[in-house]
Image 1 (cartoon, rainbow, N blue to C red):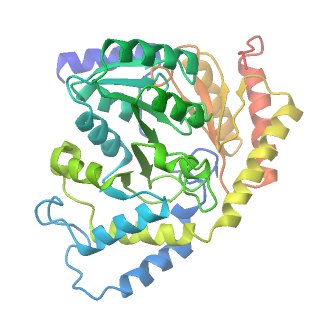
Image 2 (image 1 turned 135 degrees about the vertical axis):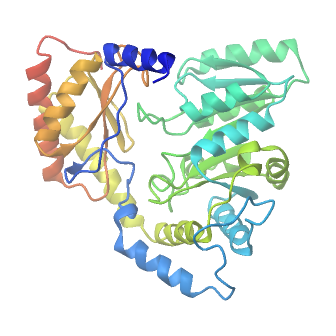
Image 3 (image 1 turned 30 degrees about the horizontal axis):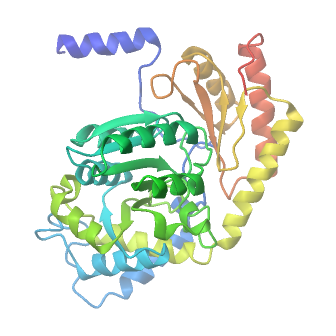
Length: 392
């Protein structure tokens, strides 16, 4: 093996941070992003068959699109799907991407120019970080959900240039802590300092809003946002993403977003699944109500069992902080032996001292399963780290 590669892997192994792939299991799911159970849904499978039967055009490219959208990979179905999703989320236009990662990197790296500035929440997803890194703009983080710090930075940089384009990038629901961005306050600040706001709605899609349109629509802010990213690989149970915004933004991305231009388009079969998932989402209000009631139940049970280390969250993402990679790995392994699929989130994915077990709640989880999970967590946490009490 290449010596540099071997040394890097050995260092990770020594630090307890080496990542490894694991195969699916039959444990009770408290780990996946399949919040509404769509990924395992027979109804979605049948919906895809029905959607396929409606096609009146030749099914060319159903398993492979044969090229990028700018060459042979475009279709009338793709463009109609973009229009449908845009209208669903109350946006003027949208452009499909192959994943949330490529949507964020392709959007941010292309819209922010050399003379521009990007301010991003310090807990932003890696795809946002990479989009920022790939852009030619200057960039600075602001403290997580700290509006005073964001305003301080906006005020400073706006005072140095009245013409520079300022971009603010946040997630509506953060993927590790499960908390919400204060979008109303952020919108107000962006208006005050003439900044363009980009919101990643990955973990809000399907969960918030009357029909799962996300936090932006739930708060009535859709006209105040420069761009939104909705991904399909979480609550929608499929794959891909869309960037929503103005028609000008869509056309700009078609011309300048490298992750759109230089990649093979999603095949027709993927597009059929996305459309079928949205069809299901439009009448899945009971699933959304169920997951939100489970969130309330989970929070009350955490309080009842008096388990230290939980970060309070009103989303489907719940985390219990357990300092140290080895400790969190040991506890998660013991909880898995009890039959509950939870996964350790290690440093460097999260900062040192913020290692955690990340728990995802789903519409299909039951009160009995939640009770069992929390009993197992309390027992095994006290077994492994009885003297440690992380700050809530």
